[in-house]
Image (tube, rainbow, N blue to C red; front, side):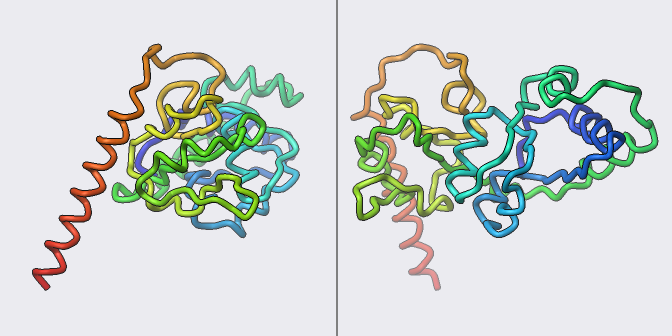
Length: 224
């Protein structure tokens, strides 16, 4: 991962609290990267409690890979106390030794600045299959299945930090979990500034990006 919205000490403290209560605890570096490249590993989360980002984003991410969690809790914006109360875990003093061990584990997670697991997922409860995200994207991230439903089939082709297709969705069904603001990141609040979306301008900008990438690729091929 190369960006992190989770506070290290908060994650470590929650992990220690659960561990002391006898729960099996697993901390992963990047749930999005896990869904993108390690589908089989993600399946081990079936029927478990997942503490991660906004519930809508996490459920959509898991559903994309055919996984359903028993419970999803938001440790991104909520406190340890709030999450503990929701999960029915009583608060207690945590072991400082265990807390330091988890903090070291989290600090030693690998980082990859070249790949950020940035891609869209679709909230099926909101999606009406209008196809606007598919028609807008020039990078081949989406495809249509035999029923005409939009699917995210090539997440690696998504342009890093570009959430433009989400802004074309009339139902706010397209989620980028690593986006800073709601509702694009799956959060329920309206944090993004209200704006009139000029889809033509967004499309032209994406087209320029695509053509620039294509020209760069051609130039590299000529140099070989």
